[in-house]
Length: 446
Image 1 (tube, rainbow, N blue to C red):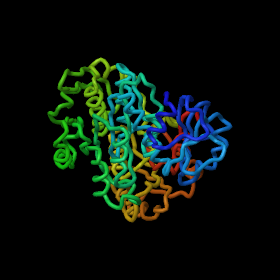
Image 2: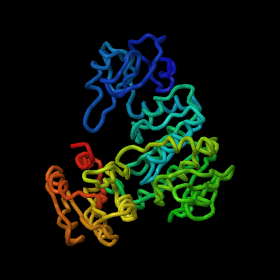
Image 3: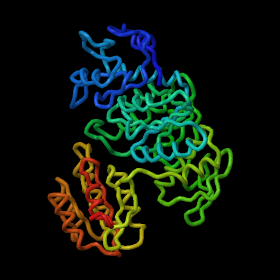
Image 4: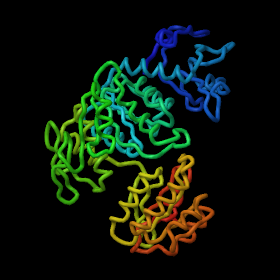
């Protein structure tokens, strides 16, 4: 990147102090450990750390300028009232300076996969910036944008939320012209309070910003009519796994599908997972990429090269011929139910290693019991649990359910039982660190 001191002064409406106005800023960081020469350090006050405490470290490591909420004596700085807002304003200016096609993606389930798939397709035909790691909030999204280079033609940005107003804030920064609202289900209820607040927040991505967006919606979603009414000033593009739409699956032959689009047919697209949720993700990705300008060959090339991140229903070789289904990246009630459905459709005996789902508020125990009941009803044969709700979960599932106080005791118990007739789904929210269980049960790991 390349931002002048004069540009920063204009963006932030504040004068730079103790700095040479001819200096050019080549990057932005909020972490003093990773700052490089001629970069801008923004002293963000977070939940655990205050960036102001690390200003000296940032200067030692090469920072050319500090954005601070407090006056500094000797260091070069710009004084602002809110450093988080300053970060947002700089990112907004920089995005407008590059002026790419900007894609925004939100939803409770699947947004990281759809973001990665869409990026993989578009990289086949355009210079593409994608959300960095899981940087999808009011701090992460601006940092993702500020990773861009001026040659980038398209931004593919994941947009997360934990409270009402979060998505509105992100679209004001990024100003996307193509958006997808994937779905809504219970998550982050500690901060949202109820499902209606989640719906209201996610649909902020449909807000009119003075120009019409292209909005991608699932025709089969329960909220489709509601979201269509909120998108009357936008161009609505519909997807569907099982019925005619703008983008839909025209036919399938085993793991090869044909996708109908408004512009061309995509023939013989090989998909490894035929579950409806995964096919939905593929259709969203194809629609987003094609509306941005991708062609059939780009879709085939991008999805053939696509590798999703670990922890999202990846099927791996386990000990003694077993199969380990790694879904340890994250969990909420809807994704848990979908993963159980996918487990059941696989050959061999289904087992489930279940951890906690975080941030579900006052109904958290109820949601965990519902998952246990669904697992039993669908035919899961054995359930292994680490949770503060273990007693309720085991009572709901009944026989062949087992509770453990630690990851280590669970691993020691289950290892000798593994055999080539078993598929084990490992699922929990990330804070449970169930990826440790996955690694311990893989062939060749221990």
